[in-house]
Amino acid sequence: MPPRIKVLEAISSISAGRVKKEDAGIYKVRSSKGDKEYIVIIKNSMAYSNDNGTIFKGYIGYPIIASLMIEGILPKNDKIGEAIKNIPWADLNESLKSYKKVEEKVKEEAKKNGVQPEEIDDYVELVMQALKMITLRFKDMRQLGLE
Image (cartoon, rainbow, N blue to C red; front, side):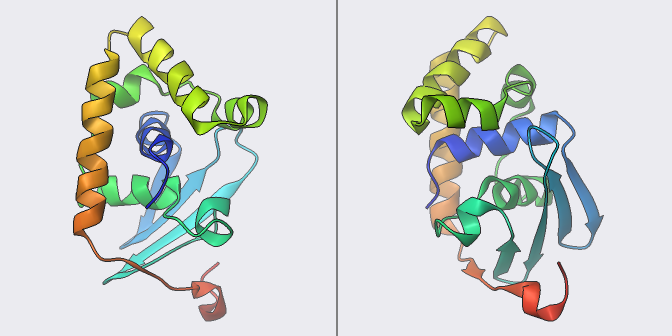
């Protein structure tokens, strides 16, 4: 399971226009700084992404979560996404070095934009519960030449 903050990073990446569907089950996701592009492949119960969370930390990274939201497999909340679409994720993660602190900053920004912290907590919990209900296996699709 991913850290809670990855749900928020996913929905904001959609609202910021950083997630692009390339083909059936194939997405490209630009990082918040715009300096990296991740590929996501979702096929049957297999998922692949070349983001750090998925490859190196062993959890479903935000690019996969965002792609699953667009696919309609996970719930999407456009109101929350719009409220936090300009969050500088990489900068916050690097400077605060704590997902909990980043989440607090994100909630502050959302509140300024009309979304209460309780709405965010409810939404994150909804997505986390939905993630628990689906079965996805990581498949390193680099070996198929799809990266």
